[in-house]
Length: 481
Image 1 (cartoon, rainbow, N blue to C red):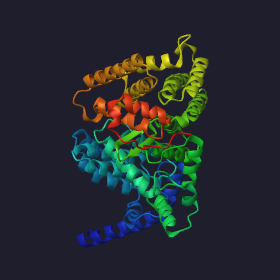
Image 2: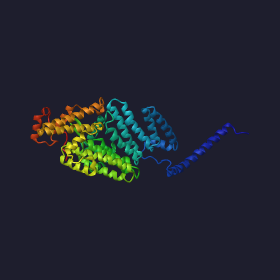
Image 3: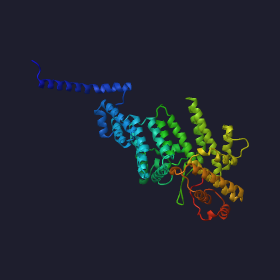
Image 4: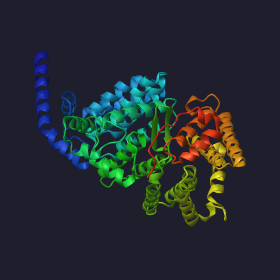
């Protein structure tokens, strides 16, 4: 007689229960074997939220299948441009498989680059950029503290999304971040001693905020400040250097080329515009940080030496970048009236790259030639600096009662302004203020204590330049040491 339907069901349930029980006993052994073979990472998550701990432990190997299905769907949504829908699916994947680095990186990039630009209001954009940063810094590194790619992408958000000018809101990002940092530091720069060894309740609160919210170590910040600085910690480049360096500390022998490039590229950017000047009488300005020029030079040589053992093309690329940096340094020192140091850098450039400087060229001739060459490829920051440089030299000529040089420098400034404005019409993120605004900025600086002009020179400038009489002197920044 055949087995009844009820008996079959009971038998099947008993077999299923037996198999599940056996699976429960075998799963730890299988997990250990999979981990030993490097097939998957199944170690328990430390300090994980209860829901994440539950999903990663209960689902076992099935979580990988579910994550794969969700990843396929994310790829489809990305092709369709449905970025908002991707956020939730990516969040689920990171809960199922928090050790898949690429998911964290794609989700962060999606927030900071794809979703942010969907909004026209800058504060809305900034919230999504912040969320992209927080995702990597606060969540991805929590479960993947030794993954260099996460550190590299975190540094890249500071260096590229906040630091560069490819987004119309880039000035808003810089200003919002600087305001946060000034509130954190209770001023324009951090007091490392008080952050490392806080004594008062207020100091302890700031140190705790730095550690808990921004995940930064003040001792590490001070070490980088001494090695690569002085750095302006209100600017994104300093934070790109920080996270690249922390990533190298955790890389444990993995490929760190992106992290190394994050350091020397951000140092170069800090040299170009790494000094934030705030004034109630003028718009915020980013000026060169000439004090770190020797350290940028050293960083390039260090990276070239490291690259030499890997590939010749890397060495060649870095050598070209180093040459371009050295070509900038003499005329920047000339612009800011540090002529003796500029002449030293010009001699150093001749020594390292003899073809970069025509024989017999003086520092002044070199600076003027450098200002106008390859005009079509110049960036907004560089053009702003060049225009201010020409106007600065014009006013020095005026003080020296040299009308011809004054007119020539002013003419060159106007040519630069006209040329750049004509090739970037209607582009808000790269537009330049009127030329008269540049003149006012330079005059305020020269009439203030930063430029170091004598009282007689300032009086002559006010007498000979009608615009100067309309401006009150300000102190936009302390003079560089």
